[in-house]
Length: 208
Length: 270
Ligand SMILES: Nc1ncnc2c1ncn2[C@@H]1O[C@H](COP(=O)(O)OP(=O)(O)O)[C@@H](O)[C@H]1O
Ligand SMILES: [Mg+2]
Image (cartoon, rainbow over all chains, first blue to last red; front, side, top):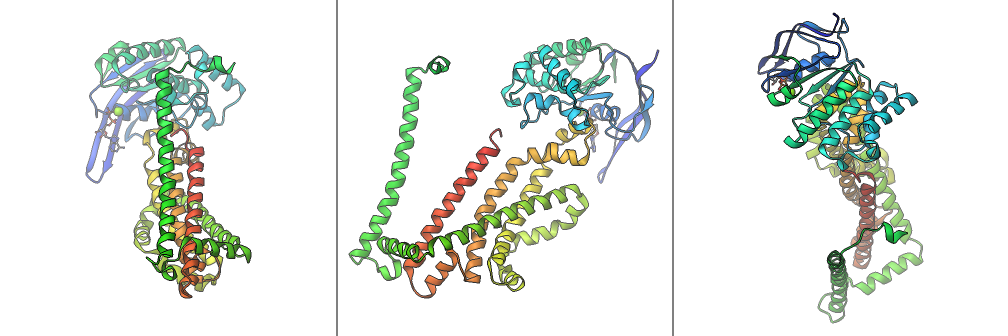
């Protein structure tokens, strides 16, 4: 069986004048196609660092990450990264927000625009496409952020405490919502969280 | 049709709206009344000899002075000279300030190197450089614009750079996950999210530019409201001084309103 993501002997040290921080040390795991894994650990244990390394935003101190069998050296459109907060841009409409990825990559064509519209329609945000983020509820914003990640057509989704900014009620609904969307779009996903219940609600495999 | 689309307004809400409107009207009327009373009292005090109109002037004499200026065709010349210098001063100040802020945001090395110089320049009263510019550029409107610009440019650099550096790092991380280049980070995240900061810097620049232009006209003494003020003072024509100050207040107020309107237009969503 081929792994979509393999993390081998991964280590990351941050350096500052106060000394160095050993954020990650000798991490190994692999994820197969279509799998949805959760990684649970306390704040500061290096979860965000791990995802940033998988996304190719940083260069690890030791070891390497393989995506589709190839070592990661820079960001790629294979990996979609959903941050803790939705970070929708207040000065863009929802539609302009969700096409941000292709716009930056320079791959924004009619087909991608139609795909964005289709996703907005499927996940109940079509009527809100010309509204600004401040006019949406927390759950809707989170969905818009997920669509923004999906429009770039990643194979792998990285979710960094993607729902902890929401209140409990909304979170339950959105977590289920998003889980369904990810399954439906048949994506491989890695979710990290400090909240065990959030991890378990999406649990397929547990690490850390 | 339009009635159908309008949501029903309850009588309570209607009463509330009326009350708010009323309050606004009362405030406006009071403001105008204060101004009218002030001028009426000034006029009266001068007429009954409570104050000496030779050194304090008086509203009727101010009006006559403005009328005279208008008749010999000087009024608009001076107003336009001062306004054009001011607008050029704050436009150049803001644009150059933002440009330098972008450069310093781009290169952390440059920023660190320049920082102490900026701090010194910021605490230096830029007016002190006025005579230098006049010698270099020549006693004319260009020197005045440069003085006005110098005053606003330093504040703009500091304010805008601060805004750039305060942009949420996660927003930058987000566009980086899409492979954004540094120029894209600038145009897609840093500039748009700093728009309110930049407009605010513009507002501050407008005020500073007025100061620079008036002082510049004091020094150059050729044309403009600042020239009229300094000239009137030298020949002991307080009517001319007061008239110029009042025109200046009106022009400054109008320009402030225009900038406030521009701000509303640009940063409506923040
Ligand atoms: N850019 C950075 N510079 C220095 N130290 C960092 C940086 N990012 C994270 N760290 C440190 O690395 C450790 C792991 O951080 P992080 O990956 O954010 O953990 P988590 O996401 O699990 O809360 C923490 O001790 C944090 O202080
Ligand atoms: Mg984290």
